[in-house]
Image 1: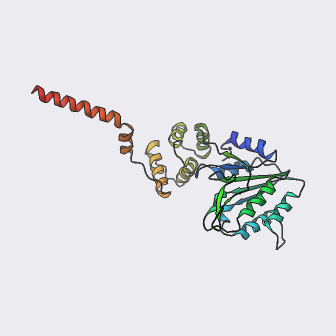
Image 2: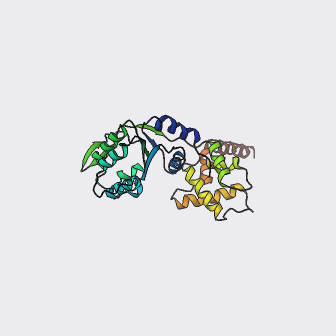
Amino acid sequence: MSNILREHFTTNIYNNIILESKSINIFGAEGIGKSRFIKDFKTLITQDIKVVSINLKNRRKDYNSFVDEIKKQLNIIEAFISFSELLDTFASSNENVLLILDNFEAIYKDNADEKFDFDFFDELNSFKNRDNASLVIISTRNYKHYEFYHEGKSITSPLDIGVMEISPLTLEEIKEELEDRFELDITYDKLANMIIGNERVYELIEFIDREVKFDRYDENANLYMNYEKFLNQFKKENNIPIEDKAKKFVGKNWKDIKGLISSLGGLLNKDKKGE
C-alpha cells in the first residue's frame, strides 16, 4: 500500500493542526479506518517534529506500563518519573512535539487503571497548551469535556480540545484502495459500490484482502458471489447480524406488494361474480 487513504482529510489535519501546534480529538465508529489514518498521518510528519505514539488499548489496565512506554520512546532511563514530569521533559526541547493517543476510549472501560483520572486529563490539557506541543486523540467518540464517573462521583474532564469526526470513505477512495491492494481481474468500481454501504467499511476491506491473499477468491464464481461469501464470513466472525435478503426485499417493497395483493384479490372477486 502506497496511497494515503483519506488524502484530503489527512493532509488538512497535518497542515492546519500539527504544523500550527494545535490539538484535536479525531473520532469515528469502529472499523472505519482510524488506525489507518494514524499510519498515513505519520508518513507526513517531518524529522523536525518529535513524536510519541501510544495505543491505550494495550495499556489501559496498567498506568505504569503506559508511563514506561513513553519513557522508552523518549529514551529516558530514570526509574522514578511521573507522567507530568515526562510531558515536561518531552515538551522542553526546542523541537515541535506531538503526542498521539490511539483507542482513547479504552481508559473509560470498567477495568481500566484508576490512575487514568482527573489529574491525567489535566496533565494532557497542560501539555497541549504549550506553544510547541500538539495532542492528537483518536477515539470512537468525542471526549472534549467528557463526563465520567470516578469513585462513585460524576466528573467532567478538563480536557479542552478541538474535535473532528473522521470523514467517511468516498467511492473513489475505496476504489483506489482496492486497486492498490489487489491484482484481480475484476471491475473495481463494482466492488467499491458493494462495499461502500457497510458501517465497518475499512475493516471489511482488510478482511477481503486477507481472504484474497489466502487464495479464497473463487475464479469460477462471479464478483458478487465472492463478495457475498466474504461479507457473510466477515459478519459471522465479528458477530454482526447477517441480513435476510428476502425479508429486506419484502419490507422495502411492502407498499407495492400490498397493492398487488389487493389488486389480485379484486380480480378474483370479479371473476367469482362473473361465474
